Length: 86
Image (cartoon, rainbow, N blue to C red; front, side, top):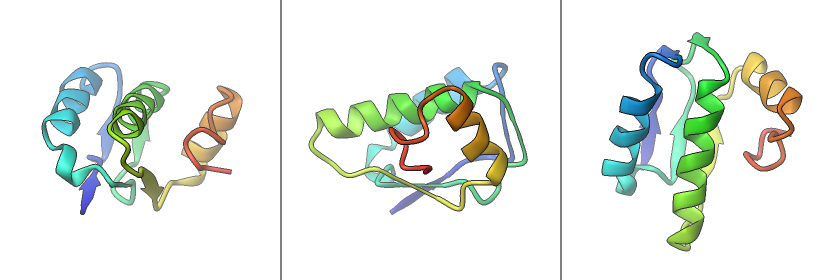
C-alpha cells in the first residue's frame, strides 16, 4: 500500500505527519510524493524517520513520484542515496 504525502510538508506540520505515518505503518511500504508542492528540509526528516522504522522492522521502503526539487534537496543534504532518490 501507498501512503500519500500532502501538498505541503514544512516545519509547521512535519511532526503531525511523522506521527500519522508511524501510526499507519501498514501503508508505509511506498510513499507517494505526487501531491507534494510546497516543502522544505523537514520533509527529509520525516522520510528518513519512516525509512529507519521500516528497516528496523525488516520491511521495504520506497518513494514514488518524487519531484525534482525533492531530489535536489536530498542531494544537497547528502541523503539522496539513503532515500533511493538518485
